Length: 178
Figure 1: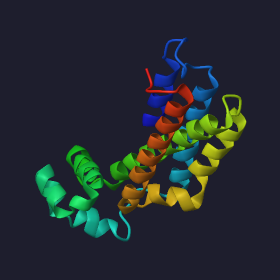
Figure 2: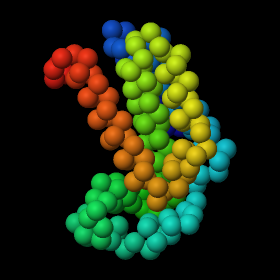
Figure 3: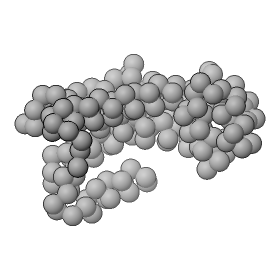
């Protein structure tokens, strides 16, 4: 499965890499990947529901050029670009759309870990792990991973947390990252 591949990729990193197999961060990331995959599998993701029909199935611009998809709703350009790329890669395969959302949700869960660790100190892996696990498994939060149309929420959260993490690291280091 793709989960096993991502876990194996983490294990193959050189030992000096901060995410090398055996590091706390690697264990947290592997745990988050497995927990989210299990939670979404149990939740039954894999079909289009509610607003997914007009947003994905009835959206003929996804079958056209990226420009056509972006013209349909320029206010959600990133979401439409991701939906378009998802359609181009897998057609109307609901399982693949859910896999992309699950991957984005996992990435956000990992960012929660790093942001909490950044804010509470390097030795706070337990608190950061708990926060990331709560975020990954909370039914209110992971609903956006099950509901394809809520992809914009996942993307907004991803970019917001990435920006916050970059800002806090910038402040801690007293300047741009190397």
